[in-house]
Amino acid sequence: MAKSFLSIEGLAKRFPAPSGGGGPLTVFEDVSFSIEKGEFVCIIGHSGCGKSTIMNVLAGLDEATEGGVIMNGKEVRGPSLDRGVVFQNYSLLPWLSALKNVTFAVKARHKNWSREEVLAHSYKYLEMVGLSGGAELRKPSQLSGGMRQRVSIARAFAIQPELLLLDEPFGALDALTRGTIQDELLKIWRGTNQTVFMITHDVDEAIYLADRILLMTNGPEARVAESVEVGIPRPRSRDEIVEHPHYYKVRNHLVHFLARRSKELAGTKSTAPGGKPETVRFGAEDGEEPARPSIYAINQ
Ligand SMILES: Nc1ncnc2c1ncn2[C@@H]1O[C@H](COP(=O)(O)OP(=O)(O)OP(=O)(O)O)[C@@H](O)[C@H]1O
Image (cartoon, rainbow, N blue to C red):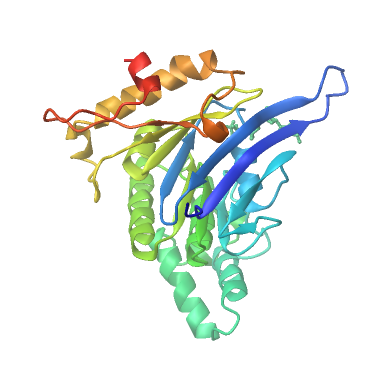
């Protein structure tokens, strides 16, 4: 069988017992899933289940206690420009302007580019996120939280990594900017065959953007329990997506998982082969028999 672009195999993360006593904290265990080249995958789960920790392991910034990550047939060990990350807390270099934060990364990626090429490329992405007209010359401390997040997004997009890792990238943005940058992200993703793995708490954002949505049970001992296929054709429009017959089925499934099943399934083991999440797929209307896995049928 062909290997996936990204394979997460039997990942577990434990932290030593806190000084007050007790056993080690198992944040998650038996986390296994794969992502195909060019897929857009979102992950949703309650606070503390370990989403950011999984992302840090994918980025090569943290090590799992058990298991590993294979990308393009190679084990992920340490960070790489093939994996671009946007964190919740921007992680910009505070002594550099917004522009230099981006050019710094672009120069590292394209060592043989001229100064003009680096500048033109960096400006393209800064303008895309709405940072121009002088704002790009300010240092992070002189920018608002939303503006800093936009610099961080421009920097990650500008290095055109094979895998884009986004940890709640739009959380600090106002609704209008958020919508614009979501659409830019989709445009870039469609045009580049990049693979995107994104954490979000917003079910509507996940349905609008993703091909698949991974659902995590509550921690400790969390796991990825389900992989929900969105199944809504692209390009998607914000106005029309809610009219699609799958939209509310997917949305209700996600909300129900977060409200009830993430807790009910907490601490249970996967019954699927290799600990992979159950696939949840919603069938077409018009009399076609939907391919519903047992887990979906149970929760109808
Ligand atoms: N260095 C550490 N030592 C001990 N526990 C830690 C450490 N880092 C993270 N944790 C714990 O690991 C768990 C998972 O944290 P993580 O930030 O990955 O969760 P998350 O799902 O991304 O949460 P959120 O949605 O709030 O961002 C939390 O319970 C956190 O307290």
